Image (cartoon, rainbow, N blue to C red; front, side, top):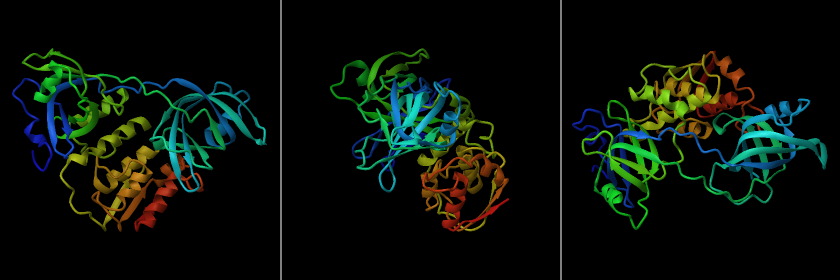
Length: 397
């Protein structure tokens, strides 16, 4: 132990014919970490979320915008897919709830009884609550966005969403297999006899080929079963009942394989990926949480942003992070996180100069993506305004 934390370098090597790729670490109530095991492999790390059951919802008094407006303008919009949609529930000042309508499909629509200019739209969708359920505001309003939260474009607003607020069963857990696991005594006890208490959650630390932590995922240490490992050598293969809800999609495998070779050393390696892949890339930039505390923030100087590939929100944050700190570095992955990074503590702090080359690419690509439904600025314009408000000199080229 060192300062309450497991010293990673003490556990990333063993005398076997294959490398350690994963560590399982749990923090106790006193904040002290305990190594639960190290493993050669994991099956079930990459899993698409179990789709939520389909439901029927009605958007009441809807004023459509963007994609939703385009769909309703079609002669027959019935059964037209909208993809994933985000519903923000606002009180008088700010959003307080976020819901995702998974694979939303238009079932029917009709004029709203109180205002023929608006619509009541019936949707079929899976429903996922993105935050802990909070009490509904006394006078809520509902903002609609097309796409995932990290890269959503305005789709309008409505006065109510029938069928949204109700209790839903948690999805069944998806197990995970720890392959070639050298377990410590607490885990071995769990594999040999039933436990009287739930062992709780732990961090599965994913190592790159150099033994550095490249990612972390939360897993449940409840053990379904264990057996001698297919890798032999006195190891075990252990089945965890629940591998956690924040596992990467199988589509992210190539990105993780690339990062396994070590942190990126060249710029724009994220550029060939689509929006989902770029979001997965951004997720891996946050691995620095286990790196020793960064040096004091640097201010001043000139930074250059290569804007040629900034065609979506994840791409914008990949490019800004590289411009300020270098390839593979973290400086926010969405609006709120980026705003926090500008307050300092992440390696660079205003004032400085940012020259944004080929800025017109982002201006056009993000013209319909908004952060503030009340505002008139696009995501690109909001980012530029935020930078300038925080003391950054932005030069658009």
